[in-house]
Length: 457
Ligand code: BES
Ligand code: MN
Ligand code: MN
Image 1 (tube, protein in one colour):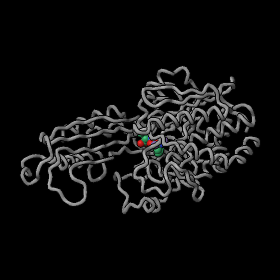
Image 2 (tube, rainbow, N blue to C red; image 1 turned 30 degrees about the vertical axis):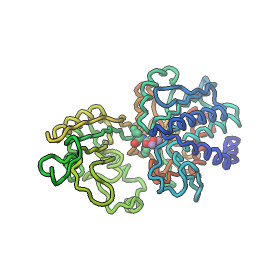
Image 3 (cartoon, rainbow, N blue to C red; image 1 turned 45 degrees about the vertical axis):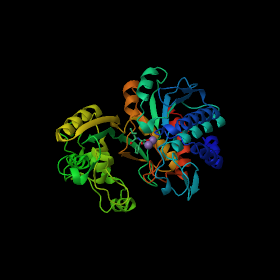
Image 4 (cartoon, rainbow, N blue to C red; image 1 turned 90 degrees about the horizontal axis):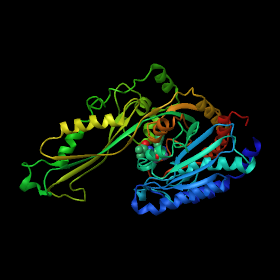
């Protein structure tokens, strides 16, 4: 479809200008001080969906941030794509690590730097532009499309489960498409067929009513900072195995064929380690790096707090200590089951000398699909159209909890059509999106709609 492709090529500079505007809105869902910006971003998103020619554009209120909906349903014979993404972004701290301001998008060496460039505004914007190219040039889409864009993905999609159940009929579709993952590597486009799940907790320990002089009281009361370290040290053994009883019971073991597929991928472990700046890689014994990343569960400490952390020394026994911990899960682990096992074990290894409070934050189920499903194959052909080369098939270590919700509630197969990169710095300073990949991604997306419809493109 030359008219569509030509239009995309002609629009390159305009895309960057518009995306810059989108990226300027600090839609940080985690910070209450940015609630107005999140709403403003929802409006910008809705206006944009209208501008590109989608219909029935709506902001749907939830108990949290609004969901943006739009559709185009004039292809009665064709399948319907439900396109999900998120317009919220992660906080930007540490701010002084950014080379250019996080909400002033800046192009350097073919990459656009800004919070949300890859995760996920840049990737949903790619679909806005693909739809625009079809509607402006052809006057119609080859498929029916429903867009559902949320503002709470980065805080665990709190209200999307309820939302999906409430709007089940309106969301009916044939396939779910999500562009919110990195591709395997620079120059190695991929289709992702598996995601890990997540179970996230906060652990609070209290030893005494107040901080204490460590000379006057040291040796007679428990130190929550030290107890916390002892507790955490019992979560994994030296070979990297999680020690929570029953933790591995439901883990689907890797098939030899899948291990062989992983081993074929162009992965340079040494380069990977060097780029990360890690003195040595670590992980569960008897698994390769990609196996550890994609097919094995983990236990991580995400944050720690106790006692005096300022300059100099202060002789104190802290009254409290806190840790944020999370587990990445793989098929068939269930976050609720794991939560139960974790809490039981945590209570068992916590001594009576401290008071324990454990709170469950967010979570989500792991997900995996067969990559011989016809939608995945259609996506692979579309990637080839946009990138000039066939994609590899990979899994990912991250989580998109709504994938399994959509699968369960709406019965939808999913295609993960991501065009980010492993070094995109998502959730970190200097987040970026490669503009070449973005551009190829717009063309690939225009092709995806045709491939899913099964029409010539
Ligand atoms: N886009 C990511 C998910 C992702 C990242 C998938 C890397 C594959 C590879 C998404 O925005 C995200 O950050 N998800 C959270 C989920 C959590 C908040 C429930 C995650 O994975 O930590
Ligand atoms: Mn994302
Ligand atoms: Mn994210």
